[in-house]
Image (cartoon, rainbow, N blue to C red):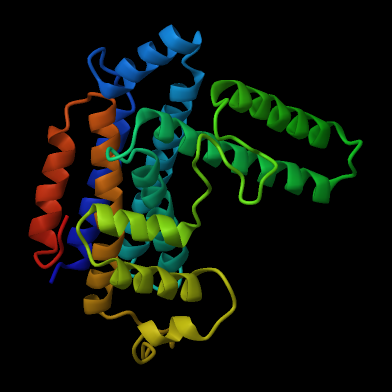
Length: 281
């Protein structure tokens, strides 16, 4: 079983690898560059493929930075309730990257999935702006204009099997996936037992964000000095296995898609296998 300081060191190292990758240009012979050139040639624009890079880049950065935040909590010896929302978020962001970059589907479908994700983000921003101010507010109007401009582009980019007014909406035959469905997809793509991963995610949803008694199930007796709940080393080990697996898969997939040297990510996978010998990473 990995010691807490070893886990924290690994999480910091994962963020460092992601930050080094962020300085790299997309390789000219990469799938990303190939599909962008193809889109530019056939459609006159690479914006559909650019969206794939946008979401994968941002979500792997978010996940890796949250990993480092978990390392800070663990190293401080305060690995308690604050870990749960971070763990849930890392898994969600990583599973979404795996879904968008799925090598088993066509480039068209990957682009459609990225477009669905960005459109959903725009909808959420418009809804938030509407709640924060009335619909004559400049922020609301700007958000709505951005959403509509993207939707015009989507209809132009994907003229077949696209209906943004349908429920669920449809882009090139693709429909939105729930976070749970993306976690199940990650598990199946990684050769894991999807039912177990659905259970892991269900537990994190129950314990992470909403008022609930479920979080207490993961803690032992209160500390004699602080009187705060304590997380066992065994549970910390199992929680971090669950977080690391999808994050590494997302990072590996993104690095390969961009044609970057994947040896650093492969090194992380080897470290994870040594750190969590019972986990498949």
